[in-house]
Image 1 (cartoon, rainbow, N blue to C red):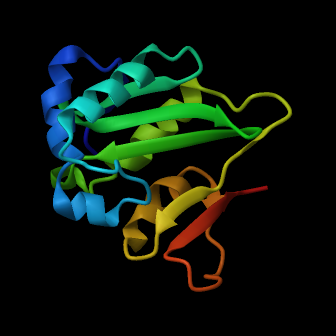
Image 2: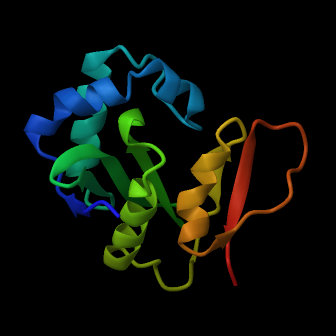
Length: 154
């Protein structure tokens, strides 16, 4: 198992993170992306907002000391939500699952709320591994949407 850790996002991470979030295959697989992944100004503004928002916990995900992506937690519509982006070169190694477990240890669900369902694009079934590895259950597919949800267990 690779050594996965979380740390604050640093200015020196931004070039690599921008490249990761512009990767065409990763963009195709993601449930939510930037309107224009090649717009670096919009990326920098978005990252500045995330890094400075008091109600958002944004962390760099590292694997064996190397930047592998980001993970963040935020509160929306009565639910704690999590989003992450892992560099395609690191897919399939359990990095997102471990990063999610580490983040959930740091950012507990607010009292009186429940975790949001995991939202995963159907064309990327392996993306269900992190949420299911951290205690969600995957429901049967419903409807024609390209997005499935995995609900918190319990």
